[in-house]
View (tube, rainbow, N blue to C red):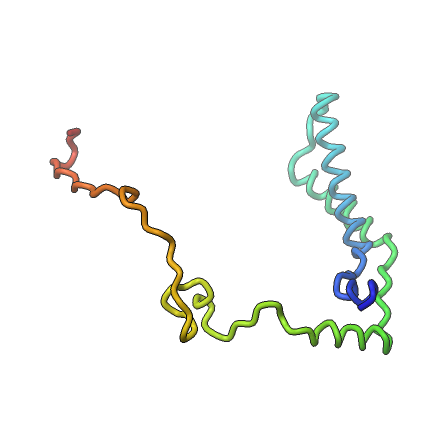
Length: 139
C-alpha cells in the first residue's frame, strides 16, 4: 500500500472561502469595537447598531469573497484505492450487543470470566439513616 493510498481517506475539502471571509470579518469588527472601548475609552454604539454594523460587514465580506472550487471527482486509480481501503476488515469485529464488549456476563461460550480481584476493607462503610427532625427546625 503506497503513501497516497494510505492517506486517501484523510484528504478533506478546503475551507469554504466565503465562510472564512465572513467569520474573519465578524471577528475583525468585534475586535475593533472592543479595542476602541478598552484602549481609547470610546463608548460603544447601542447594541442594535453594533449588531447591524457587524451583520453588514459580514454580509459584504461573504459576498465579495471568491467562490470555493469544488473537488474533482475521483479517477479510476483513486476509486480503486478507496475500494481497497474500505475492503480491509476492522481490527476488532463484534457482532453482539454494544454492552457485551465490556460485560462480565455476556461472553462467548468457553471464555473464562476475568474479574478484578476484590480487596477486603475497600467496601464502602454502611451508612446509618439520618434521624428525622421536625420541619423548619435546625437539629
